[in-house]
Amino acid sequence: MKAIAVLPGKPNTVHLRDVPKPILNGKDSGRSVLVKVLRVGVDGTDKEINAAEYGEAPSGDDFLIIGHESFGRVEAVGPNVTELKPGDYVVATVRRPGSSIYDQIGTNDMTTDDTYFERGINLRHGFLAEYYLDDAEFIVKVPQGLKHVGVLLEPTTVVEKGIAQAYEIQRRLRVWRPRRAAVMGAGTIGLLATLVLRLRGLEVTTFGLTPRPYLNSDLIEAIGARYQSTRELPILEAAKKYGPFDLIFEATGASSVVFDSMQALAKNGVLVLSSVTGGDRKIEVPADMINLQFVLGNKVMVGTVNANREYFEMGVRDMAQAEAEYPGWLSRLLTHPVKGLENYSELLDKLTSAKGAIKVFCEVAEL
Ligand code: BGC
Ligand code: ZN
Image (cartoon, rainbow, N blue to C red; front, side, top):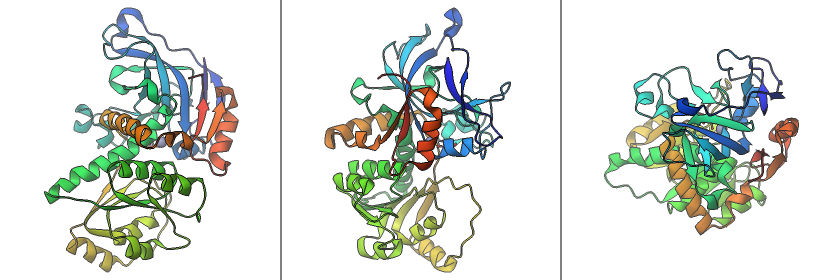
């Protein structure tokens, strides 16, 4: 079968290759599920992998099949799989268990191991192929009515985890009535965070660089949130005008925004950090003041990465609610389809340079 792969360690090696189709093996297939891939989204992580900044091949191979934002249809299941059947639409989780205690209890997104096993990212092949095989434990069913937007589930889970963790942490307050939220960044993750916070009933201000109006600001306003360009009003000034914020979700990819966010946070507030910043930027910050406000205001800051099955299930429920409350909104994020695995270079080109792209994805097969 065809697959899109890179040669880890060497920059710009993305290519199409022929690999053996995985097979479900009779009596040994146990809890295995064979999935036909329909769509796969790409993001900044794929860019980094193709730039050889991150990512390793599985042992025994010198290539890594990329793609971690999957959507597919079950083709066949092993004899011990009762929860899925051929024809079901599914999305696979990304990280596979390591050895820490968190991995052992099914929360491998919280691993304390230094090595991550992530499909399409590190040491495990990904989903940009015609088929994949995995254990039912890592495969989440998506209702038929969400199939047109199912490829957005994996990025949604990153948001679900961050927000669920924030609410979990805030149980420290016994009573927490968050009213105002801010989302830093209006890219795919920022848009999805805005959606999930709107579904929770919060007043949301989402910050981006670009002055409105453009597609992303239109999308934000379409779900009753406010869009604010930081070129027109810097974060700290906006916080005076619209804040302070009880919950802030940071997803700009720029670490300096974290320190502005710390200052824009309300007393008892929670700041969620989700940007994977690979650089080594240094900045000067008003450290005494930020620290004092954090101490006197009982504020919390938490980092979040990846998502386990629980957050995939939450994501499915929120996407269904979103379709009911804001019909058609999720589909508007699917801006840049690329047909067929063989068009892998177009896929990567769009990912790196398409103007106005929200979600670039490969249509591997018909839905
Ligand atoms: C993926 C996560 C993953 C993270 C770090 C992100 O792009 O969506 O699932 O854990 O990269 O590798
Ligand atoms: Zn990702």
